[in-house]
Amino acid sequence: MNIGGVQLKSNLLLAPIAGFTDAGFRHICASYGAGLTCTELVSAKGLVYGGKGSEELLFTTPETSPRAVQLFGNDPEFIFKAAADERLKPFDIIDINMGCPVKKVFNNGEGSALMANPELAAEVVRAAIEGSGKPVTVKMRAGIRQGEPIAVELALAVQKAGACAVTVHPRYREQFYVGAADHSVTRAVKEALDIPVIANGDITDFESLSRVKEESGADGFMIARGALGRPYIFRQLLGQEYDFDARKVIAEHIRILRSYTPDRVVANLMKNHLCHYAKGKSFAKEVRVLAGQAKCLDDIMRIVDAFF
Ligand SMILES: Cc1cc2nc3c(=O)[nH]c(=O)nc-3n(C[C@H](O)[C@H](O)[C@H](O)COP(=O)(O)O)c2cc1C
Image (cartoon, rainbow, N blue to C red; front, side, top):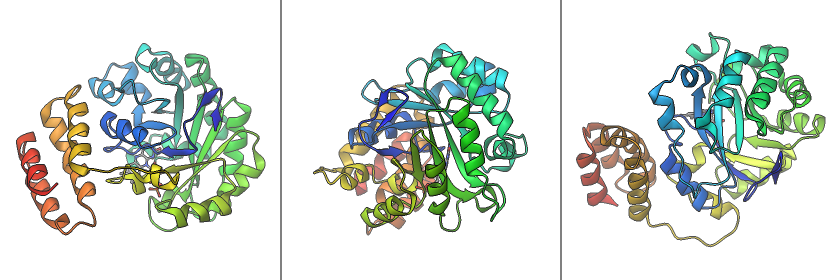
């Protein structure tokens, strides 16, 4: 699969997941065959105003390639400046978030709120292209209110503005992450567009991947929650052999995080990851309880030593 001249390693993509797709996790998923990885959403305004938080979200290892960064915002001027920022240089693709349902973002007219305004959405895409000179993609939902799909209209507008691909997570903003994704909406987008369309939502195994393939007819498939604690899902779905030694993978994950962020932040990020790495295991509950109580990286290391 090719997005605006960037050749992906496979057509299975790792979704942006706030609090989880840190540089360590993206590195690991790429090593297990993810064709493209993406940072979590980064505020265009925050980046332009020099927020230190954004810089850590932009860290990447050289091996994580190709790589996308996701920006959110609704002001074309800020999007232009953020897209032109030196700190985005390591990224091959810029994705614009038009799906975030969170109240703070939505009430600001950003994230999924942009779906209601295809003209402004198109301006945002043009600004990102002009600022970066890179391929720009858009990640969207089915629409805002249930039963009122606006994905096709929005997708056509951003394609016209120069977007190189769109990802459809076919739930409505008011559903947040609940209820089934309706991939007939993804199919309608696929049938209307000339650029590649990526289907996202409810892909967790072979069966669900086959179903989403059939329902959507999409070119690529993006996985979010199904990859948490299971970075090997990409190799699995690609039908390739793989090794997964959780202890080794967690050690590598922690090593990468420590190379760019303080131990206090590493501990907080790993708390959540450990719960996912332990999911389905006999010790899952104990890990969840201990991770909830962990106060520092030493506490996290003790959990790793005891259980993995
Ligand atoms: C905790 C969490 C954080 C998320 N953060 C982002 C984000 O930063 N940007 C984004 O576009 N989508 C974000 N999403 C949405 C996912 O990328 C994806 O669209 C959604 O989870 C559906 O895919 P899935 O069924 O494979 O989980 C997030 C989802 C969750 C559960």
